Image (tube, rainbow over all chains, first blue to last red; front, side, top):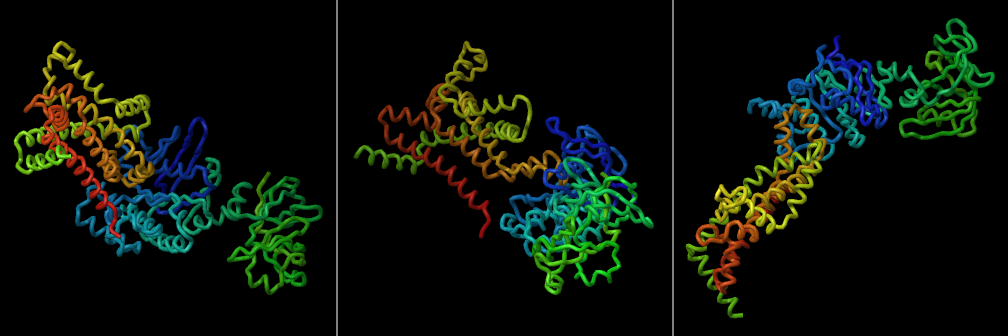
Length: 361
Length: 233
């Protein structure tokens, strides 16, 4: 794989405030790069830089290895990409004409335009809305039209700026399941910006985490989730348990980290004895056991504690424990009722040494 | 009351019989105000668009010019233009004073700020992200403008109608720079003034009715277009 687009040393600032600082970010051909970060992190600015709608104060944007020359016309470059924004921003005309917009800009022949529009309307399940006025479309239908309007251009680079953020959960869900195979079949290189972790995991082949204008980490979804590079990233990607600790021992390549007086967590890591670390543990990695079952588990870590809080999150239940240090676990409703877990109940938290991620302090 | 009824009956007679004097005045009014409106569109729409979209030094000055222009009394326009075009004035050599050309010029000066101001509002009310979205679909600058004009077509039409309505019914400046010469520079408004002062109410009412018709007609067209523009539900 070779990079289709690359940002090098890019800096965007407004009124001396740095909005975006990306030393190096490459988007590989055919991949979907999900850019995640909280609101106001600079994600949209990153997308604007990629869309050549914002000229960075410093640095280069390389397309197929060639740096963009901002003094020349950007139109030939811009015609190789397509942008979908959070709001559908449809024109005051029919759905058909809206989807045809980009082809009209390129003076495509009428017949070809008609065929392509019909194909993409059909592909996004809005063929029956072709003649409807854009203003009468629902939010989901309008966003489908907006996606069709971009995909019809068969862009080399597709830029998605929170396209699902305004949609209700069922609509968002079905649209995402439909978009993923389209992106794969067409092999469209995509940059997908979102503040939603789950959306990023669903569509992204790779994640890039941006916070406060800084590109903090890139990697596979598993990597970013299991091995967040910092405390901020850890809490953003849903690592519920983060404990300060000191590496106290090492046995057969497994570190022992003291997180509370007398309480040592086994973890896999490279840190030196005596160094200070943050112990990160994702809630889905923690298994809850009844005290008498504890011996049957193969996991290295077992901590007896009492249930402090039980919160029903709909799909699963979040259980907060006190084991001398706080631990958060996710469990299904079925297991909660089978084990009779309730506040004050004794329970054992069990997790593997490989599930623990250490961030050096 | 008789004087009104007699006037109205006489006026209808003049209109229905196609009175040559009346027809001539109406046609000249339409020609002068029509061409003035056209010119004000050519200048005012790009000017308003520039103000709506542009971020540049001197923008507030240009904006101030529009706002001042919109509130400028037409009589002052007539006064200034009369002095400029006066035989011994700086533009006297053009021999424009008391010609339809001078009247068009006066009306362009009056209508352009109106057209520019309303166009600016029309373009500014569009979602600023629409421009980015169109660029993000591969639009050239001209294509972006074309889309913006299309999106703002109804408010832009309002701008045109406001400009036309402003000049067709204006009397102060055209009487000063046109001179109200019968058969040459006499238009609807100035003719109404003249005929009324002469007590010639029949013709004055006829002219007034035509003027009302034009003003209402313009608004009617606008309303119909606006209704056609909204989706049939």
